[in-house]
Image (tube, rainbow over all chains, first blue to last red; front, side, top):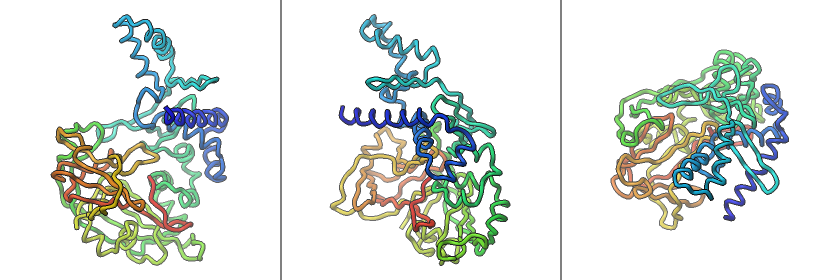
Length: 295
Length: 107
């Protein structure tokens, strides 16, 4: 119970911060938050909304009502009035539009069912909306681009994305989406990037796609094909690091997802796979020889 | 040595230190912005917790396959699956340069 109490207290703190920050919304707020890097309430609100949809499973202690409310059917079937006394109001709340209920000693938090926008990809559903929030909720609207949670302006105003946003973004997935939304040509033009080395790596790539919809019996039945990964090392004429050296990036095409990822390289890197090896603490030679299978 | 790479996760064959602390089997890495995870799964009837063990030492995470390693695969919602081929691995997280020095890649 101590752990549950602690978790409940943490969640309550997030919920209170979420309420306090409710006014901070949408694209301008998101961009301002990124630029200022100090919008504590907005970030807490986002954490809370993220927890609602990405928490660890849909267990009863997560207060998601659709699961809990089904208890009322069992109580009715078994004529259990004690259980019906608390489960019927939950069923009523669910039918009235409630999605998540959370309570502390003196406060009941109610979140209505969100409006979600999804797309099908590789046999699974993921959040995506090209023009607005992919999840519209009482807590906070969340913007997803093909399943990746991003700041609002990345979806609705990609023309606002700057090299500085990309450079300061810690998350590689978000950075990838920012570059995609900005457009590779514009990214290269604004950063004055030039390719200083291109290389390839031929290795074994699994052929079986994996998603949550793939039957469990199929998950480990993996066949392999030979494939080639392409990597480029790029140098910026426009942007320098603190030592005045030009910023370098390595760009790899992920052979598994088909996505293109850009990672920041080290100033002394001169070869694409020298950088990639270094990202795993290996030399270029060791990386090329020892990485047996890729995805 | 046959390393397995899946996105920002590298499993490198190794010998697990004898004094490494055993930990519960859990996802190897979590995606902060996608809710996805790199995890070990199996297609056998046996629960994966009975096919692998995980250990920690000095901030490193280790994986040990107890039986046939090919019964276990490294999976991710958007990547392809990889069967394990070796008995013991260490998880090597990908890093990159930044304005503030080398940092772990997060996704």
